Image (cartoon, rainbow, N blue to C red; front, top):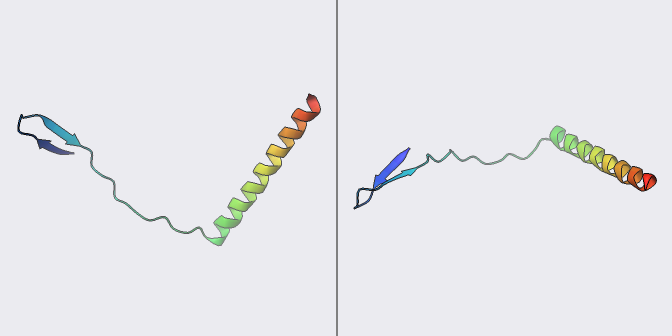
Length: 56
């Protein structure tokens, strides 16, 4: 923790900043996994909407 003192003697504490890093582009396997998850989510939501329309 980084601490400073001003002219009145008041302390200011600053949190330690985390080390920054750049995101990496997903691999082909990750991209296909994301696409599959998207398709499953769309099918799931569509089925929920159709069930609610059928019940009401």
